[in-house]
Image 1 (cartoon, rainbow, N blue to C red):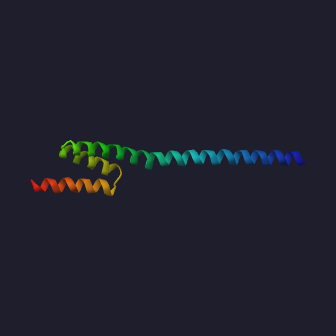
Image 2: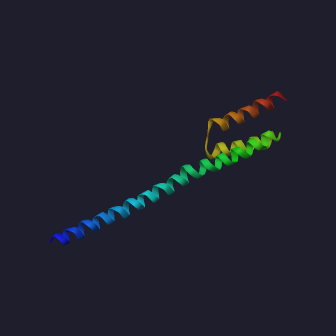
Image 3: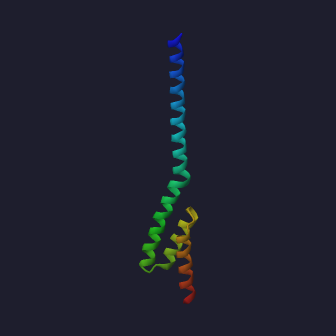
Length: 91
């Protein structure tokens, strides 16, 4: 009787462990899809925009900053867009 209870408890523990493991994988995949990858892509595009800006390509920089902002809005991106708009209005 005792060994049967042990087997049942072990099988329940294994099932719980498997379910928790699957949930962790699903949550991590969701994080990557909805937070990690968009934020990383946005940062990469933002960096390209900074490079374009430093090379004097304001139109290209603004386009890249807009694209980065569409992927993952951030105050630094919005500040750069405003900075380009302000420079454009001076001319």
